[in-house]
Length: 138
Image (cartoon, rainbow, N blue to C red; front, side, top):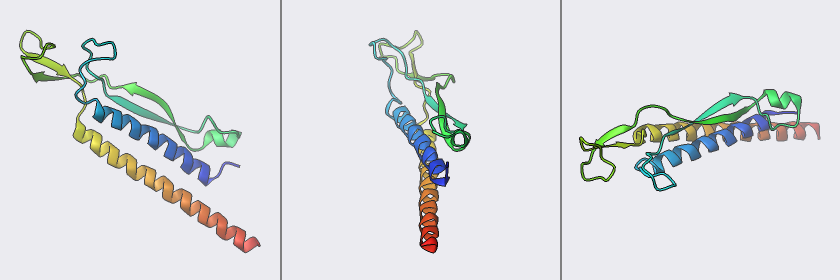
């Protein structure tokens, strides 16, 4: 049986992945060089959710809950920054920097933390209700 605990757990796992992506975005907000050492500004990552839990063992479980369907790159434009001394500056002295707004990322992190907490509260409430039901039966 796929219960409320499993639904809350899938939500917590999805939000944990989203928080890791947000943390990576903030950590790389000034990254201009890729892993190969070439100029390649970091591109913001966005976590996409989808309904259902494909990892569930039951058919009904695959229809409930949530899962991360993809982590996509944000294709919005890089942010130009005037830095004529940079080795990556163009002929006008501008360097293209990552398309990450740390204020927006912090807001997204707060939203993600609240969603995670809501799933924790829902799981705790489900556990409490199950325990009370068992006490009534016994």
